[in-house]
Length: 482
Image 1 (cartoon, helix red, strand yellow):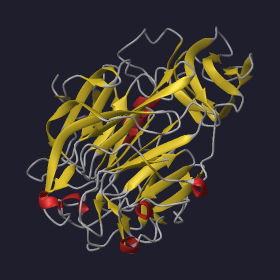
Image 2 (image 1 turned 180 degrees about the vertical axis):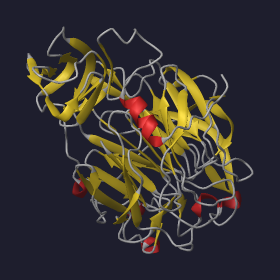
Image 3 (image 1 turned 90 degrees about the vertical axis):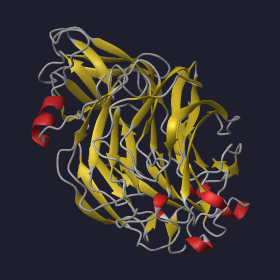
Image 4 (image 1 turned 120 degrees about the horizontal axis):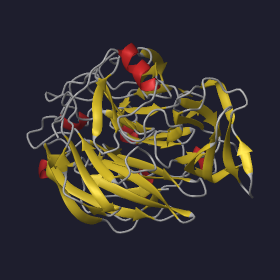
């Protein structure tokens, strides 16, 4: 398959995608549910907004309804949002009494349509209770690993698998020296309470990459009825960013087939803000092949064949940004922190160039996932400029861990937390947590990787992998979790 890049005017693109439709599946005249929250069989959380895509729902709701299986038996009716009913999509809120099973859309005229969903309890993460614990050490000691957690229902539990690809190790062991990318890919299972099993090395990337991003697709988070790991962008052995996207299919969640190149990004990028939501991949900012932070924003949807069905150019960021963080909500996206000026590979270890405390935000369509308006500056979310940190989304709370900031040498704010209110992310405050990684000998980490996931009971877990100790300038192989 020849990789392609699709670029459409924003208004035409959003209009086309919001109407639904696909070149796959039954003809458009057949009433049906195609996808729920961008997936075939999604993992949902009580109280979250959900978008149901398909055909034949009717142009208006009338007496139509959306029902979920109820805890204890029966059906619980979901609230449809104002203006949220059309013939091709319905937007509703998952009821607090919902459980896994059939989701049913019953139009005012016609038969009920159903799909299978998995519903988890809504548990609020309390940053004050955060307690870092040492996990199974990583086989390497790199910075800039591409790390992702994949979840699948397994009976009454969730099976969580961690994938760590590439990374960079300083030449000669010092964080001030040149960075040498790695090609190794490691896999580990996460137990329900958060511990990590032994890391195995089933497959390597075909080439070295560091400061890339990783995404996992399956039927529970995308339109792909299979399993695939993607490694996007990153720097190569020459220290230059690349536009490559590598995909490895998974027969089971710990066995990777060979990585193959698929649809590349329109431009090279490393250290980008990358977020996955509703089967779409958002790639924002990042440094180009010369180390210059960029304005580019791309959205790609994971297709039914496992490929990316086009990288769509979206409104550019107001200013260049690399090695920062970001979050995607129902109808808004935000980016924060990072670097605006050229810096060494991986962002460097010095406070110069200045780190960003500012944030930018833009509106996106819940149905299509594409931007509906340009970006706008949203003021500082971080108390001081910060970059090269790990970002851990935990429901209504987002953590940033480690990185370069003014107080980093004294570890004054190792972990900070921000609370989301609706579609907006609040300011980061802290430090938070009952202990610190540095206080347990883990080092003051710059460039660590982070991943988070949910258990079947709705509890939140996360890990931090690798990084360079800001004080000793040495790489670390620690894995820390909660």
